[in-house]
Amino acid sequence: MIKKCSSDRLRPKLVEAGYDSATVSKLDRTGLMEAMAQLMMKQSVLGLVSDATTQVDMASEIRFRELALEEKRIEAEQERRRELRKMELELKMIEEKRLEREAEQMRLKREAEAEQISVMHQMTLDVRYQ
Image 1 (cartoon, helix red, strand yellow):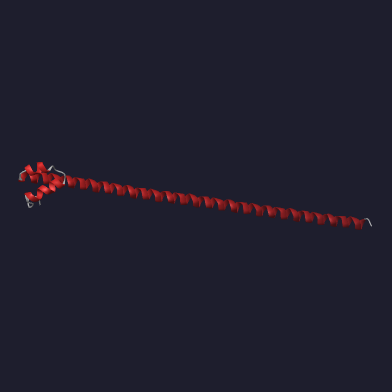
Image 2 (image 1 turned 90 degrees about the vertical axis):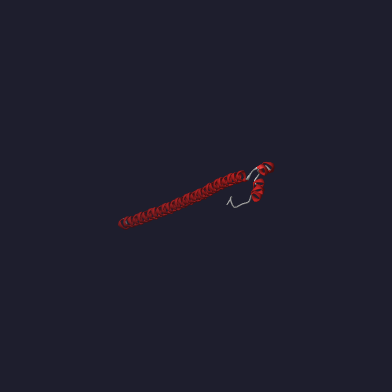
């Protein structure tokens, strides 16, 4: 590609790339081609570095997003466990209250039975002593 470019086309390209115009105008055809080859190699290397940097940046962004998603997943799991624990505690309290009600009902039933037995016993005694 460089061989096909005329010297008149190589000079402005080199000046545009930052070479000193006085120095470029003194270069012969071989010097112009060497300078252009060096410029193209620098641009190629910079392009590769830029591509690598872009790839590293993209990989970093992907990793950052993966970590953010993992953090959200962990937070959601922790929230689910908190809710589950809360429901278990509520069920336990409901069960304890049910057992307390049943115990109270049994106590009241025994007291009523004892009272009934006492009344019957008193009636039996009253009948005997009449």
